[in-house]
Amino acid sequence: MRVVIQRVKRASVTIGNKITDEIGSGILVLAGIEETDDMSDVNWLSSKIVQLRIFNDEAGVMNLSVMDTGGSIMVISQFTLHAKTKKGNRPSYIKAARHEIAIPLYENLIKKLSELTGKKVATGEFGAMMDISLINDGPVTIIIDSKEKE
Image (cartoon, rainbow, N blue to C red; front, side, top):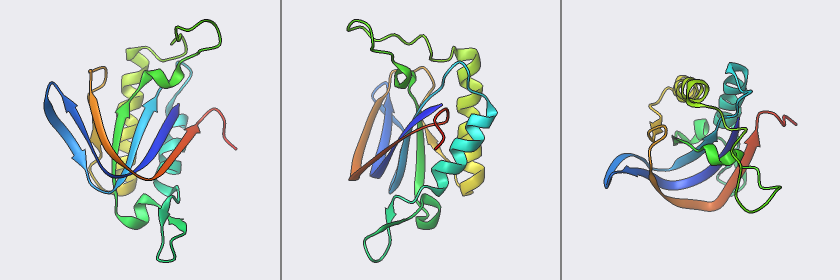
């Protein structure tokens, strides 16, 4: 599972010209699920996401997590995070999980993040054409892949 985490001042998701969810200060998580992902990836990543110290403390040092700040989380599914571009100019998405694998893992990621934070997690709609608006704070953008634990 690969995620792109963006620290945001606010973010919203629009589907069919209607804002369907939004958050204030917190993190926007773009989540790409791979065929080989399972619940161990969800558990590891969700724990990493909520504990990632990317918010400034009173000294202006990135020392606080979204849990520490009471910030919000929005999760958007994005299969294109698994694009392979080695050959040619048209990306291949062969490693991206099919719906029957991806949807339960996406839903479990949202559920786990909600459990860990004790807050509702804002979401998009899996497989929908969405417009995502955000004010990137910093900007701070982090990429984490559960297959590349360091």
